Amino acid sequence: MWPVSVAQRLAAGVAAVMGVAVGSGLQAQPGAAQPEAAQVLTVYTNANVYTADPAQPRAGAIAVRSGVIADVGGAAALLGRHPGARVVDLGGRTVLPGLIDAHGHMTGLGELTLSTLDLTGVPSEEAMVALAVARARALPPGAWVVGRNWDHERWPDRRLPSRAALSAALPDNPVFLERVDGHSAVANDAALARAGLTPQTQAPAGGAILRDQRGEPTGVLIDNAMELVGRVIDAPAPPVEDLLIEAQRRCVRAGLTGVHDMSVSVPVAEAYQRLEAAGRLALHVNVYLASAYAPEYFAQRPPTRTERLHIAGAKAYADGALGSRGAWLLEPYTDRPADDRGDPYTGLAVTAPDQIGALASHAVRRGYQLVVHAIGDRGNRQVLDAFEAAQAQAQAQAQAQGPAAGGPRFRVEHAQVLSPSDVPRFAALGVIASVQPTHCTSDMRWVPDRLGPERARGAYAWASILRAGGRLAGGSDFPVESHNPFLGFYAAVSRQDAAGWPEGGWHPEERLTRDEALRLFTIDAAYAGFREGREGSITPGKAASFIVIDRDVMTCPAADIPATRVLMTVIDGQTVHTASADAEPANP
Ligand SMILES: [Zn+2]
Image 1 (spheres, protein in one colour):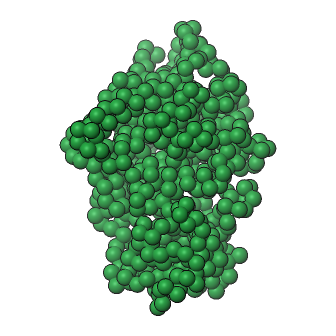
Image 2: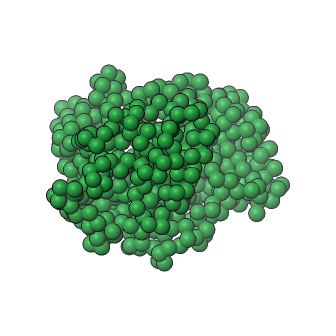
Image 3: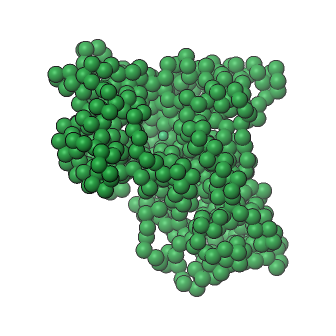
């Protein structure tokens, strides 16, 4: 329990420093400067601080001035060194560096509350259809029903949905519902008709149109085939700025102070720039453009790197996802060894490997960072090969022009299924494995079906990558998974679901320690975004971004980690979120 007096003292201190009403959070324009107050030195005392800085891992107090950490140490020492400072007593609470999600989708998170039908946790196809019908009733006649986050692996029969039930229930509204991984979708007849998709339509490269025994589309579209319908959807969307602000509100409540926003369009990148200029961007965001925009964008301008906004990278896709059997494997799928023609089925190459190589080289030449989605063991190997070739070129360029700051820092997004021989290549090539621990605990029940027991051992092999000297970065892939970083922290250290299954953890040899898990969402995520000099740890000289939480996640029973509540989020010295420990817990 947090004594009311402590909460009040905390609130009073914060209000005095910030000149804003506590709890008003982002409505108070957190980006707006407060010059006089910002000069004051504030010491946050009586705190149980984990700094994520090996030079001084623990502390009892933090001194902040002008949005920057001025001093870190014991409470008595800091108060002695800084007489006359404003004091905020944190009541013995635990403090962590502001957490960073190295892979999320901000507009998708905003849509989840503002526009899309949220199918998270829906227990059956019938329940999904019922939700779609309810949504259609609230819309004008004939309007699109767009939803996401169904997962047939959680349904009783674990069968993919089809257009049949959706078409019968909603003959007049086109319906397009994406699976939780965003790599497949089901469309009804009205949607297929609007897209002009007939039994004769062939799937584009890197995509699949699933068909029944008569050769008719089932309504399920995979990877690049989703665009056949996706491009004709004309549902009214909320303004991009509204989506980003809503996502930002949810992120800071969850304890995130930084996000790497993946597969962003140029209009969304420009919306970020407008928000920053208007003082409305509180989060530190690294924008990774969708690869389709990258060649032109790279050619036209150098990377942007301000304190809050980096537009300095792009994301490409090597393959699809394991749940949709779009991940590109070296050997056929265990549970679908052959395709419709009887040929060995190993998944989908979404982007040709030579195109990835060309994009990597282009990025290096222009000072941008390339990150590539790869899930299957073949997808991962192809990406590592492409990075290896571009790396050689980067070294030649560095010899000619002097080294680029920090090297190219190529990243593999997900790095889910690895051939054992590829694990050491992450360290050897300096490639970062950007992993999402909750993907493991969401997928672990059916991963052995797709891969068989032998390959499953090389899946989500976080500890193996670290032991081989490699570097990880942690994220959630929100809104595919929850943006709550404590769910990822819990999955990383336990490899168990929320109910504690399986006992001891799934392939427990790949669990991380709590220190490693903390690095995943702090300093290593910062490094993956070229920000380790300014954030990712509680270190003098870095941005004053930290969170106060209601329990000590570094020592509490693992089962208690998922319910962690964020009582305060501070970004650049500004308090952008506060919550009372006694109030009703809310989904961040
Ligand atoms: Zn993603």
